Image (cartoon, rainbow, N blue to C red; front, side, top):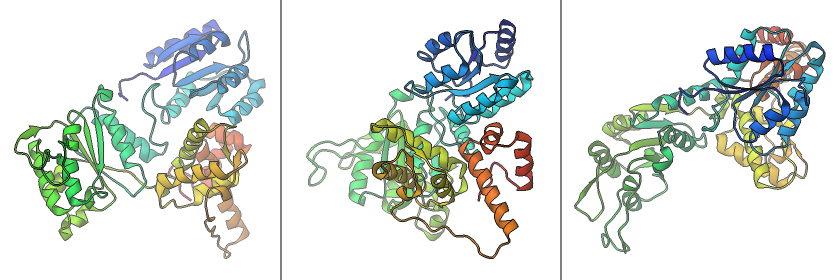
Length: 443
């Protein structure tokens, strides 16, 4: 994704004055805005063009905004984030639309600055149409996404750190796709901890025919295969010290010699390394070369574990549910409230990989469309609660957890969360202040 891309807006509004005023302001704000006056026109356009956000009046000349939205829900492919413009008597209808999945609503008469603020909030969890999806909705993952976009076509070596299962290879792949014409450039990955030293040498640098017993033909190594693109060396901390010496030379000289060969071949590529280990500690103990560490650690990206970014848990779970629905026939699956609570409370030592496997297991073995927590785990995790707290403290804890759960499940959109909770936005804000709930809150 390029930071210069414009956010694509579709405005559905039959009022000429309102439509023209909003379109002019959106143009001034730098948005790519298309204005349609009827539901049918909008429906036809959405079937052929992708948008990031749709802003729709509920009252349209040929159909209601709700009828249009319901039809779009049954269409294949992702649906843009939806904001409805409502009259006073349509608030209840707008709340119903929120429960169907709409992002937000704004009541007439409204201040254009309020609408722009809502659009700004939505862009935090929206990428321009046709581009790579976000890594998550948490502040940590949005910051990581922004860093990847800034790196763009810069060819600096990158070190990605994080626990097993956090998605380091996904981050590396997304970094690769920030390059112009990335589709024409190779992305080659190898796990340094999965191969013996001799096999790793041949895989990294290649070998000539007859270089050793079993080398029946010439084999190009990953450095050659990744020429012009990105080489991802996963679990670099598991690489034996003798191999680290040769790897350092290739990264420094940008030339590779196959095993059993004499010719040095130039390679032009970005090297991205990843590890679950603390390489600084390994350098101090002599388990990793200091010169190699500084050579690969030009830019450091840390992928935090799920327990540090609980906002992403339900967001990821729903994406995995969508993937399962696309792979299997039958009605779409959803999570029960109990299942959502268990997902948010569980520490996820296996991180995103473990979460994905839990969702897949639940979809395989659950006969119901609404997944219960028992289907997610082979053995239900223990739910610990203190017996030494007052009723007031217990109720306060439960209230805080439930509000956080609703906020997280709706990407921290206060208006939508308040509607689900059955309270006003102001009341929700006051409760968040009293219960010390912030977007980075963790239970």
